Length: 255
View 1 (tube, rainbow, N blue to C red):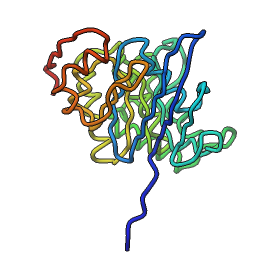
View 2: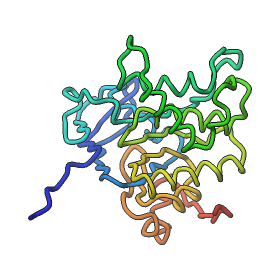
View 3: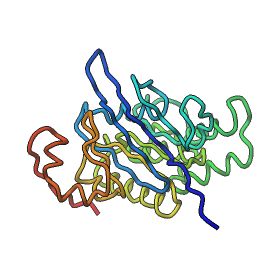
View 4: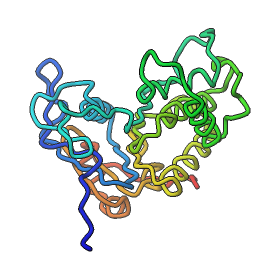
């Protein structure tokens, strides 16, 4: 029997967007296939976070279209299929009186419903998500008492608790130390390779991201490159096109 082709998890078609008349995205088209670990990189102000927000329906494009799991954005309703860790997710009042379990349980709301009590299965998914990120022993700990790296894993667990098929992370390593960053990328490898979760990660750090992802999208208002990271790294002229000036690549000591 012939296999049925499945639609990309995310498809952006000819996206344009401007802030106060200044073009931020100019005719950007990009598809994310199932099983991809896609890194979106580029300079500050290059449109990376704006593109993510358009993809998730948080900003309307000036023109172009978005499809999620083959469904036009305006008709898409299955938001539980997408987990989102926004930029600066851990920037909150450390006195906020919520435990780790309570924060992660918020990730069940898209599936359980806003006003329904969580079931035994819901709490089972909360526990499962905390085990995946290595934070199960902190179930009763107040989130404000955790380190930045631990808080980051809690917010990833919150996204995972909804059992998503696509996990989107916007600049997730900002403000955490090198050791926590190493653990973070090891976690993402597990999610992608062992749990078959499709990942989209925005970062400004080309050197690290190119060593981690299976696909690289380089964005500076326009899409400069999209493909395997090894193809990008052997073409220094693409770095120049991405940053608008000659740039020398540096290999990180990142495992």
